[in-house]
Image (cartoon, rainbow, N blue to C red; front, side, top):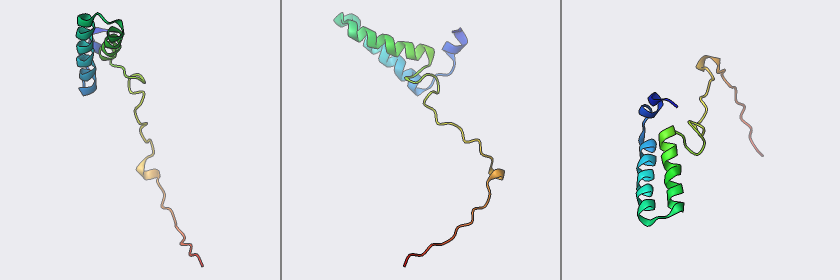
Length: 82
């Protein structure tokens, strides 16, 4: 990981993870709680590496690669019931 990755690509979720990580870290230090410290480490790791639960853009919806020119007209036939 280089410094460029740390300084670019900041969005709302990455900032929220950083804020939550710092809050949990302060709480862990104040209460001397290991579990809260692990949660803080998890959030801080996600903020620093710009990853989520699925990795970078792992949960993103795939881009539709169908071109508009390739779409053909579809003929519909009306079906009536008795």
